[in-house]
Amino acid sequence: MFSTKAEYGVRVMVELARHGGEEPVPLAEIAARDGLPLAYLEHLVARLRKAGLVDSRRGSRGGYLLARSPLKITTAEIVEALEGSIAPIECISETADGAIVCSRESDPGHVCPTKLLWTRVRFAIVRTLQETTLADLVLAPALGGRVAAPSDGAARGKLSGLDAPSAAPRSLGKGA
Image 1 (tube, rainbow, N blue to C red):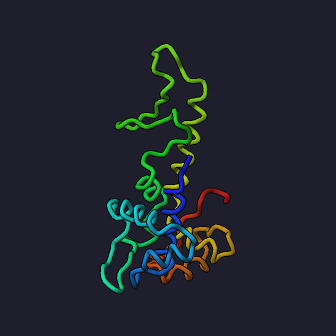
Image 2: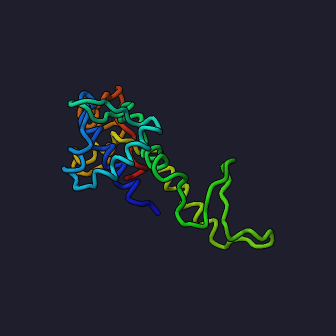
Image 3: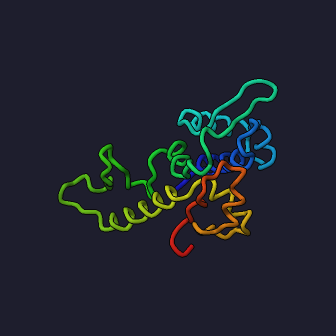
């Protein structure tokens, strides 16, 4: 479903968010801390930069910073920048006009018996990624792994270093 591009890319973005955006973070520092291959991270960060999610600074104090507040960057943006269109299995894809198609439905008389299932799975994944911000991911470990509710005052206070507005971040879903 998702490759190491999405996994490592989200981890890099979370590390950048944890630093609060004041100083650029060298990619080598993130690679060493998380045990990730630096050359691979450089490739991923180039895609994230092209997508407008990170900025770079050159020089001895150079590195990477988030292009926007962690509250305004969704995991959907990150995953799509690195993986392209999200599909739970290979035969399901999205057309340019947003329609979901199954490659096994090339014959007009054939209807895929599992297309409904995989379409629902895809929409659930996309919705979760769209509702989850980098701030949510930074906050979850600080809250002991629980998801912050919108009215969670403690969560609001912990986000102060992350350029938080007056409201706490959205939760990952209803009842989560």
